[in-house]
Amino acid sequence: MTILVGYTASKESKAALQKAIRIARLTHEDLLVVNAGPGGEHKHDSMVTEDQQLELQALLDSTGLSAEFRQYARGRSTVDELKDVADEVQPSVVVIGLKRRGTFGRFVMGSVSDGLLKELDQPVLCVKENPAKPSSVVRDAPPEDIAAAPEPRALEEATDITEAPDGPDPARTDTGPRR
Image (cartoon, rainbow, N blue to C red):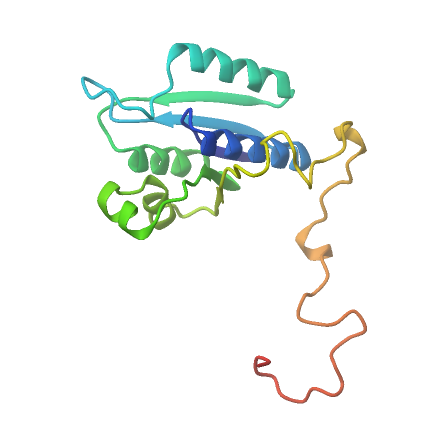
């Protein structure tokens, strides 16, 4: 399968890409990194420049993963472009960066991430860049030798989260939520 990453040159997108790389290493999936914007005579900050694209490609090459970069500037919205790519490749997850913006900021400026959350049929992982913690420091980082990482368990092998480790609580007779 493939992990789709919506990418701009922002700190949030870089954090999302780092998270997607970690997931791809653990799940042995391919990466597809997409940069999309209106294009044409409408130059937009979200479009990756040639220098940024070369830097990104060097990063992708250094991961050892099967990774591809695509850039779209066909006069369509970023949401429409990413939705079409997601429909094409049917990724296991779409990873996007999320800016910390209040309700008024989203109302005035709009939000690509809000549009993607509403429009995409695939699971979407939103990653926030944490200014208090440098991007290179990760608590749940896999071991340096990725071959030493445990294989991901299949969903069927996972324990049932509705039961306690010793079975259901015998003192509890109701089936509704606890309050």
